[in-house]
Amino acid sequence: MKMERMSLENNIDNLDQEEVIASEEEVVVDQAEVEVKKEELELNPEKLIAEEKTLLDVFRGRSAGMAKVLTLTTALILGSKFAQDAHAETPETQVTEQTDEQKEKQEFYSLEFRDDVENQLDVIDKIKLIRFVVVHDNETESIIFSPEELQNNPTLSVEGYVANVMVLGDDGIEVSLNGQGSKKIDRDHDEDYLILGGTCVHPEELQTDEYSEDFFHDLITKSELTADEHGSTYLSGGHYFGLATSMGYLGEPVNDDQNNILKFKTNDGTYSFPINQHVFQEFEPDNIEDSGRGGDLVFEYLGNRPDRISNDEGVDEHIQAITNAITRVESISGSNLIDRVRFIDYNADNAFAAHYEKEMTFTMDHLEGNDVEESAATAEHEILHKYVDQKKFTDDPEIRTLFADLKGYTSNKKTRIINNGWIPFDGFNEDYDNKIFFDFIDEKSFLGRGGGHSKDNVWEFCTSFIHSLMYLDRLDDNLQEIGDEEERMSVLDNYIHTTQVVLDNVRNLPVIGKLYDNREEKFLKDKLEQMKQLRGKLNK
Amino acid sequence: MDFNIIKIKALILKSGLSEEDQQSLLSLFAQAKDGDLKEAVKLFENDLENVKIMDDVYKAKLKVFENKDKKGWREILEEERRSLEEMEE
Image 1: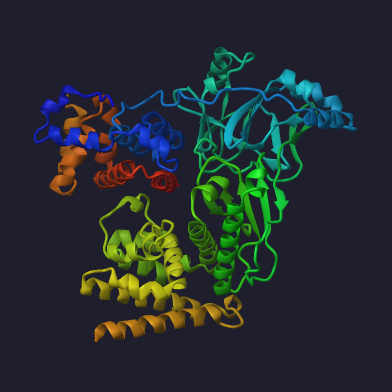
Image 2 (image 1 turned 180 degrees about the vertical axis):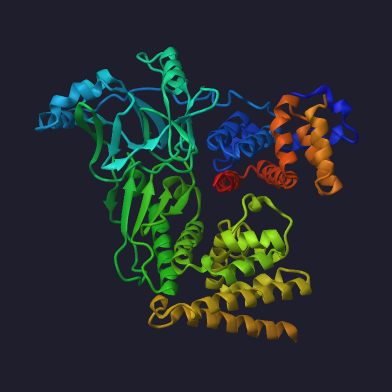
C-alpha cells in the first residue's frame, strides 16, 4: 500500500514514525484471505472511500466540513491519498436485451387503448433521458432510455426490479410514479456530478453511444437551478424516485405495486409509461410448523431467481426460525407487529423492519451467510424495535434520563439526550460510564448472537435491553462471566433499576395503551422478581 | 503562514485527549497532504469537541478495518449519516 507522505512530518515534534508505520501494517490487506471469506469487509481503499464519500457528499450545510473530514480519516487510515476521483469505478451502462416474453407484453401494451397517446411525441420531446437502477442476479445495473427508445417502447421493461428512477427533462416537466411526486436532484458545488438524496451520479455513469461526455457537462453546468422555500437549490427538470442504491445495503424496490406507472406532465399534456419489472411473489414455505402465533404470515420473494428460495431446504429452516421469533416477540407485546416477511435477492447481508408497515425484510444473502440462530436473533431485534416504537418507551423522559445517567452524562450532554434521545456521533464515543453493563446487554454478549449497540442511543438501548429480558434465564450464567464481584453487582443493580423504570412506564400508560391482560406488566414484574432473587443470592 | 498540520497539532494539544490519543491522532493527520487538512482545521477551530469526535471515529474505523468487520463498517456509515443529518437540521 503506497503512502503519500508530506515532508511536513519533520516539523512535528514528538511524532513517532514507527507508530505511523506500525498502524499502516495493522491494516494491510491479505487479499487471499479476503477473497475466501465472503462476509469479511474487503479492504479496498478506493471502494470504501467512494462508499463513504457517496453517502456523505450530500451534506452541504453546517455539516459539510465534518463530512469531508470523516472521509479524510478513512482515506488516511487506509493509507490512500484522499481520492477526489473516488468514483472512478462505476457500473457499465447498458440497455438490457428484451426477452420474447417481454416483447409479447410490450406488444400487448402497445395495442391497449391509450387516451394520452396523442401527447406521446410532445411529452417525450421534453425528456432528455430516463435512468433505472435495476437489481438483477443479485447485482445492480444502470439502464438508460433515450427519447428515441421511449418513442419505440410504450412500456419500460427490465429484467429484475427497479430500485431507483432518475428523470432528466426540460424545465417545468412534472413526473410522478403511481401518483407520488418525485424528489429533487441537486448538483455539487464544483458542477461535477448530480446528487440524488444519498447517491451521487457522475456523468461517466450515464454515458452511452447516444450520450457523450459533453452532453452531461452541458446538462450539469448549464441547467438552471431553482431554489426552494428553505433556500436549497435543485436542478430544474431533474427528478428521482427511490432510495440510495449505491450503498449496497438498501436495495429496496422503488415501488412494490404490481403495476407501476411513470407519468409525465408538461404544458402539452400528460403521457404515461407502464413499468414492466419483477414484483414481489407470494410463496408458501414448505414444512413450516405452526408456531402458535395465530394469524397467517405472508411470505414474499422479490428477484429473478425464485429457485434460490424454493429449492433450498436451508431457507425453510431460516423461515421457521424467523416465524418463531415473530411469535416470541408478539407474545410479549400482545399485539400483531409483523404481517409480512419479505426476501429480496440483493447483494448485501441485511435485515430491516419497515417503519410504518407490519413488514420485515431480509436479503437472501443474510439467509445464506448466517446460521439459523443468527436469523432468529436478528428477527427478534428488528421486531423489538417495532415494539419499542409502538410503546413509545424511547419518548419517556424517565427512560431517557436513565440512559443519560447510565452513561454518566451530565449538564449539556444529559440535556441533549433528554431532549432528543441521542447525540450525533455519540455512537463512536468510548468515554462513558457503565461500559460493562452496555456491553453485557448487547446481543453479541448476552445471546452470543447478532450485534447490538445499546450504548449508541436510547432506541438501541431499549431494544437490546428488552431482548435480553426475553432470555433472562441466561442472566446468572452471563453474570458469572464477569470476574469482578463488584462489577457483577453493579450490572445486576443496573438491570434491576432499568427494569423498574420500564415497568413504571408501562404502569403509567393510559388505560387505552394497556393490554387487557396486563401481560407486559406481568412480564416485567416476573423478570424483576427473578433479578431480585438473584441479587439476594449474590449478597449471601 | 503556518502549515495546517501545525494548527492541527496545536488544536489537538488543547483538546483534552490523553497524550497517547493526541499522538496517534496527530500521526494520522500527518499523513495527509497539507491542503487536505484545511477543513479539519476549520472544524477543530469551530469546536474543540470535534477533535474528540474525530478521535472516536478514528478508533472505531481502525477497529473495523483491523477486524475486516463488514457489518461494523455499515454501522459506522449509518452513524455518520444519521449524525450529519441531525447537524443539518
